Image (cartoon, rainbow, N blue to C red; front, side, top):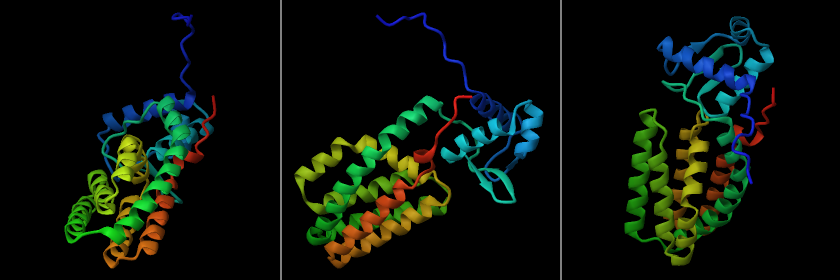
Length: 234
């Protein structure tokens, strides 16, 4: 029987640094584009080692909340600094590879079939999804909805009931991987370009090119800081 009075886990030092930074951003009313104090300054003011500060900054980079610019400092990428608990990040890191494997196998085939089976109505829906995503990217938003609409239009254009059912079964996991990818710095614009390449191949009726374009897109989705994140226990 599980001991309900087991010892409480002690917060890692870098997690405490993250919480202090969150409070600092709120109290100073900082927002996207604002610069945080440097690592040396933060370490001195918080009374911790630079290693602990570096750990905290990496944890925030993994979540797409800050960006470290070589020779320029640490900058906020969002108007708020609301990090996820480390336990949730680690759990997602562990399941993400399986999700990406499934996306590679399923979505490349869907793209190939879409190029061979799409109708004019399918192409119109795909173009509307692209326009929606373009507006989100231009507005500086995370284009989660535009991305979702585009991939949904590819699924529809493939006209495969069974593959569509498979896709629907992992829809939530795909959405999680989508968010993880799009919150990487500069990723929304790259994702839009990837989608355009897939859409162009589908419109051209070139199944091999559509599958290859989707393969490259999933490779880009797979390139996230979270997968290489190895936090220490201190």
